[in-house]
Length: 269
Ligand SMILES: [Zn+2]
Image (tube, rainbow, N blue to C red; front, side, top):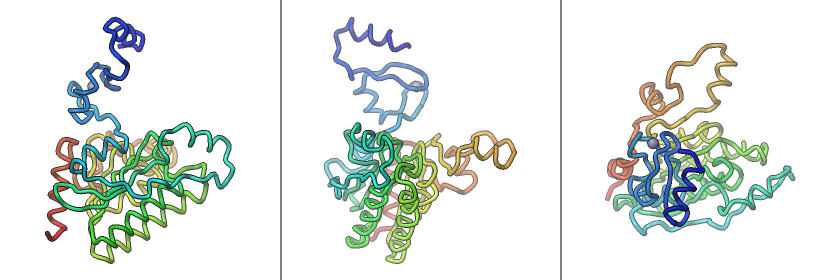
């Protein structure tokens, strides 16, 4: 359905904007309310719409249990990178990750959810710092950590300072492991670049949503570098599960239950 048709429909029915939503893949229209009740998975074709951090937390944490931490950290334009400040200002979000304490299936956890809508979920200094602080909080509180990733990789506007976050987050997670605490990584579409090459792939258990693109470099870059054609479904969750890169592919509707089961395995009540 074209956008004009939708606009006409909305006009005729006199409905406020935002009441309808459309599947990006099969273009079927749904009531926003019904679509959200189905966790933003298309009931017709099964397409997984991307979730912002707020929705992700709402669908994952026990109702009303999430308490945000470090929500006041904001990015700094260290390099005076053209257009960076404007991009930051345009978004209602402060940066590409939301972290906090929560309960999942009754288990106390520290959790973080990335938001692809803020500059492609890219990791700059604020994302790195918030992830590290979440790890430190998990250690202090002796709680497991859950990070739900969705990212295009390191943030080019922060140059080498964003690349540094790969080492910084990985080192923090090593400390979490030294403390005998579990880290569950949830990989959603897309998890690529510097985030895939650091904390997203370091879970004691790595869980992926179906059909998610997960990898370091994109398929075209790899094909051009190794001069070989890549196999079908390369870098999708199911391929990675088959080849041992992710442990389980879990449907969105089962994610909370599976996380609770994994937490039960790691946590002594
Ligand atoms: Zn669809």
